[in-house]
Length: 260
Image (tube, rainbow, N blue to C red; front, side, top):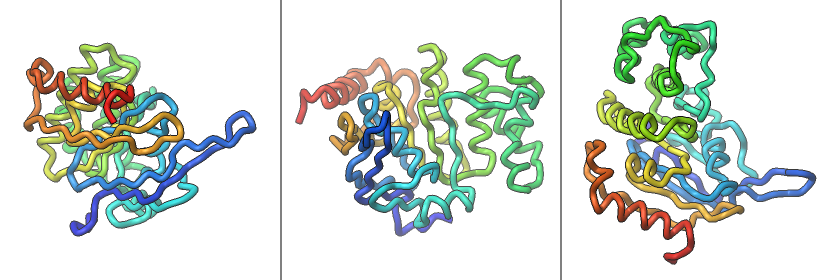
């Protein structure tokens, strides 16, 4: 599906607005951005800077007002029809009457594909839920439910993974554990997955990303592109290194406007 001569995700001059309380509001203004195949790009910025709006434009959940969005060389709508996306939101949105395995397998059912029990079981194992295949969501903790949502997002082997604050509702220790598991999972996938992560957490962005996009306050504009030169594979010991702390501090200073 991917056309190797093109970026996996391309935005050129993208602007998006909406109406709130009867007033026109510009969420994103003239965003131009490229994401390389297999790259993990994190997007951070103040509340209201258009981070989730940017993800929704890429996912074909909303159209841009101006500019162009291309995914794997296609329009977002065509990429969606080709099942290019796996998406994980802040809430896991699992069906309470379906087991973990049945929730993971749901995209196969909706796209008319053969149910692959071994693939479902392997994905649940890869996210640490091998013993909970037949558990229902109400029997799982918040972190476990989000692991199910991640496995469901990957069941169709999508080339693009979109993550919108997937760990925001979890406690700090669970959040860090899931970040490590996500990094390991993406590193062991049979093909590179281009990943876009929206987050409010600067340590999360630095730990996971190859580059971090920093947006201005509304209207969201591209303020800075921070390159994360931490080695891969990444594990939890990186969090204690001076360079990790320096990168987090640099991102924080950029957000505060202390660095031009």
